[in-house]
Every structure is written in C-alpha cells, then in structure tokens.
Image 1 (tube, rainbow, N blue to C red):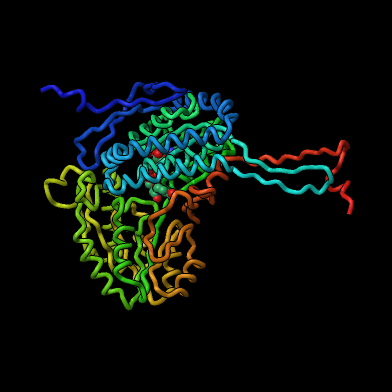
Image 2 (cartoon, helix red, strand yellow; image 1 turned 30 degrees about the horizontal axis):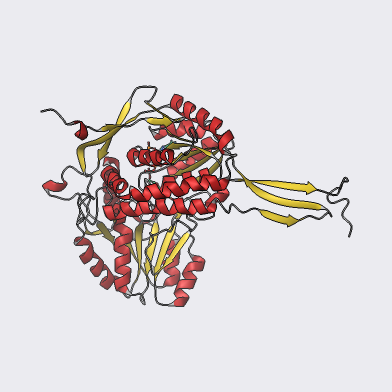
Length: 503
Ligand code: NAP
C-alpha cells in the first residue's frame, strides 16, 4: 500500500535571510505526537553552529535597515500578525495539541495569548515613551530615548509554544531588533508556522530567522555567539544558569524566565467550592507542565480533611486522553523523559513518607497505551522539607501540606528556591493583604488559581525563577531597548555641567 502524499510527514526547513534551508549537516529530527508515539507529524533540520552563523550574519545585516524603520510602521506589521493569528487560530491550536499534547481548550488559549501580545505590541509601537527632563543649565534640552539594541537570540520551551515566542519576538521587533529564534525541539511546528506568518505579513528578509535543532548545539551556539547582543530565554533553571555563565563571557544582556514550585493556600474561611475549581485547573491544566502550575496545596488544618476528600473525589473524575478530543480534561505529558521524571518524583515522595491518595501510575487501557500519559496524582501528608515539596516536578502531581494559620502558610509557601506564582483562597481581607505583602513571588492571585497570566501585565519571578527581568506588558520593552541620553545645548556658548551652574 502506498502512503498518500497528504499523509506523509511534512519536511520543514530553517528560515534564514528570507530563504528556506536544510541543515548544513543534512541531518533531520522527527516531531512525534505524545498522545500516540507512532505518529510522526513532521521532520525538521538538525542544525548546528554553521547554520547559526548564517542566521546571525543575516540578522546583523538586516538590523541596520530594520532599526531605521519607524516604530509605528513596525507596529503595523504586528497588527497584521495579530489578524493572521486570529484567522489561523484553530489550525495553530490543533498543530500545538498534536505536537505537545495539551487539550484544545488550552492550545486555543495559547494562540489567543499570541494574538493579544501582537495587538499590544502594535499599540506599544506608538508609545515606546522616553523622558524629557529639565536641564541644570539655561538654553539646554535634555531627553532620554529608547534605542534598538541589535540581534536578539530567542530560546523557548515547549509548554507554551506560541505564547512564549510571541512574548519575546514581538517586543524585540517593535523595539527595532532583529531575531535569531531557536524553538524547543518538542514543538518546532507551531514555531515554524508563527515564523511563516511573520514573513507573510511583511517582516523584511533577515529580520526574523529560525534555526531548528538541539539546545546543547543550536541553543548554545546562539548564547555563545559574539555577534548576538541579547538573549531572552525561558526554560529550566539548570539550563538558565548555564546560559547565564556562557553569555557573561561576551557581556550579553540576558533575560531568564525559569522554573517554579507554586503554591495555592486554602484558608479555613475560604470558599471551598471556588478553591476546588482553582486547584483542579492550576494543578492539572497543561498536565501540570506549566511554570505557574500549582504543585503545592497548603491547607488550613480546620478544613484539611474535608477539602482533601473533595479534591481526591474530583481528581478521580478527570478524563485522560488525546487533547484533540473535546471530552478530554488532561492530555499526555510531552515526552518519555517527562514521564520518567514524574515517576521518579512519585517514588521519592512515597519513600519520604507521603501518601499517594490517587493516581501515582500510568493509566491502564488500550486507548492510552501509545501515549505519554500519567494519572493525575495527589500526595497527602507532605511536609515542607520533603523533596516533593521543594523541587519542580513539572507534571500532574500535587503535594498537599497542612498548616495552622496564615503566617505558617506563607512561610511554607516561601520555603523553596523558586518564586514565580502563588495563590490564596480566603474571604478575610487581612489574610489576603498579609499574603500579598509577605509571599516572595513575582505573582500573587487572590481567590484565583496560580495560572492565568494576562498579556498586558508583567510576568516573571524572584529567586531561582529568574534574573530580575519581566516579560509581558510594558516591562518587557525595557529589556529589548537601550536608553540613549541626549543633551541639546542651544545657548551658543560652552556651558559646563556642575561648574557653570549659578545658584
Ligand atoms: P529546558 O530543557 O531548559 O529547554 C528550554 C529551551 O532551551 C529549549 O529550546 C531547549 O532546546 C533549550 N536548551 C536546552 N539546553 C540548552 C543549552 N545548553 N543551551 C541553550 N539552550 C538550551 O526547558 P523545557 O523542558 O523546555 O521547559 C520546562 C522548563 O521551563 C520548566 O522548568 C519550566 O518551569 C520552565 N518554564 C518557565 C517559564 C517562565 O516564564 N518562568 C515558562 C515556561 C516554562 P531543546 O528543546 O532542543 O532541548
């Protein structure tokens, strides 16, 4: 039987300087469906340093003309990008579900975040505000304005294959930088389709380049490249630290958005129905593979037994399956490595004395036998010092900890090396404001789950979650632009600052 051409995996290429290329090595890698590992969706070039060199040279050259395009014109392109993303939302969502597994409801949301980010970027292009400041001397004008920086290296993870690249690429472009983009090897197709849209809407050749391939080769070649000026990276803290080290040799500006170990607190005065919906969504959305996923549940002792029994009951009802089916609540994990990590941590938790209240294994059943599925899992009786309470698992595993009051709940929340998202369910204003003040995290939600960032708000974390930069909203434009300070002296004579000032 011959395979129809439409059923053959599509062969994608790199896109460099306005043209498509295979990897110089001629090698490729496969993109497979995590809900059915037999299904090869597409193939991609397995690139290396030489391919990165070409992309960087193209981006360097293109930067010199792109930086001179008026920012509002750059923004107009982003407006068209938003329109095309809207028109192709369903196709992009399906592509994403097929290559990384999360359910359609969520992949549609992921594309929507890209759309919101595009329209925000288009409008920001007409702001990019600077400052005018009075001079200390007469007949002199002072201002500070934003300038493009150069070539931006963009390295992204697989869990938000559309939203995260757009958080970085769109502001980079609006600020007048050119881009070399390396997406995660688990989600190259969504990334390739995003770049196709950018090109279709008029981004000039060389301004956006995509190079597919492994993190240690393509990713590291970008980080190490002397002609790349800044790196924006989202991924694990382990890789983030490596990137920080290597990039420091060429004094690059680096933005790191890294791991999390987010907690939801449920106080004794909380609306338990609301807290239940929140934790189910926060812990098991994206199969627990969100940097903001709820991986710890911290419950007041007075409602601990009741809330846990409600939670276990509802968790057992979650339907595992292919994310393309509208009836599925929880899709597969992204790959075998993730399943093994989850299995390892559940074992560690059990050895440390935690109790597996539900889940704790791969599911039975023929339908799920060829996917990277794992049952939503709840570990009860967890104490703050256990590894499952401190280390990022990045899967559908929730560790539940009992506390006596809000101060202890906040202390436990703060007891990890991460600080991305946090959530408190309470009807007491005093509890809420104490939590807002004392939780050490980049984001705190009151009466809402730990997940749910909006595109126009700053996003990022403290401690080992990052290095102090923020994505999203107006704050990311700080990262992608450089301040130029300008003095215009129209006095017609030499005026010396600090010396010719008259009191
Ligand atoms: P990862 O293994 O750190 O990979 C992230 C990206 O870096 C991928 O494109 C990867 O390429 C590349 N990479 C890997 N090793 C590299 C190296 N030595 N040099 C340069 N690039 C390298 O993370 P992941 O598994 O994709 O994503 C999960 C992690 O991301 C979790 O820790 C999660 O918390 C974090 N995350 C954080 C945020 C946030 O905003 N704070 C958001 C989402 C995810 P390959 O795919 O080819 O390996």
